[in-house]
Amino acid sequence: MIDFYKFPPKTPKTIDRLQIADCMEIIINDLARYGVPERLALKIVDDFYIPLKRTTDAIKAIYAEKCFKNTPDSSFEK
Image (tube, rainbow, N blue to C red; front, side, top):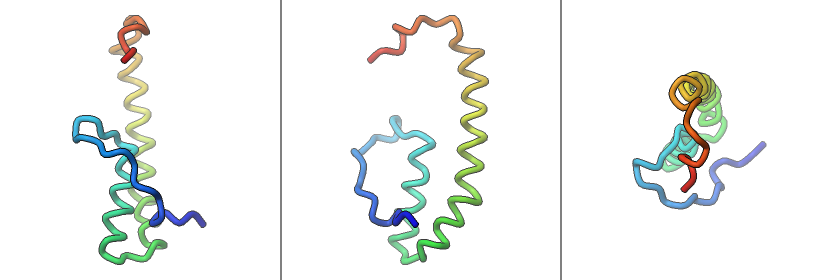
């Protein structure tokens, strides 16, 4: 089993740079601070975060196609 509580901290992000994928790290780290067993934290991730991520990925794909299909790739370069 992967030990999520021992993940190294990621690069600090401001609120405008957070992504839905960051929610898992937030959930796991927050529960770890309260001493919640890893098994229970993983169940919460499985029950709530994974369905949320799947749904939001599908929604993003739909809207990316609608909103950005005619936008040149150069618009997304940093």
